[in-house]
Length: 158
Image 1 (tube, rainbow, N blue to C red):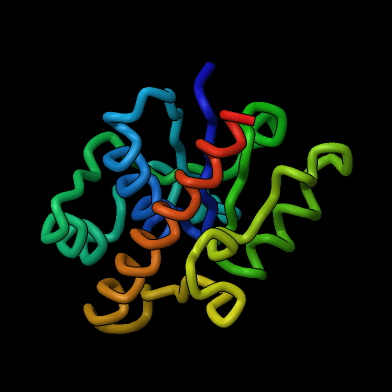
Image 2: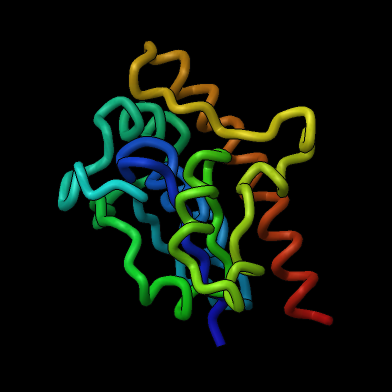
């Protein structure tokens, strides 16, 4: 049975598709199957490809964004996914408002799995900044995905 992971940010064009791409690559060769998706709490970019700046930085790190397009969080996501990871506190609050109370245990901040948590609590939104912000986001997400994978594999074994 696959471990189903959903990454969530505001527009689903920078941070969550980056996490989506990183997680797909990092889990591709594992013996435990993973199903990875990303979504936004806003539908303002529905159907759009990830931000070209994210794609450019991601390609420099060897990641592919092929087949990743923005979509909003759906009510069915709360039942379907095993873990739903918000990139920041605002998006976590939006998810908590929509998620049925019995399923809220699935909601977490992505950075809880980063080695520098709780000193670093959020993945900053690079959208309005320069290219350096996208590199920072990639580094945070790569380290966070390593911690997340380790955690999820440990949960699977117990």
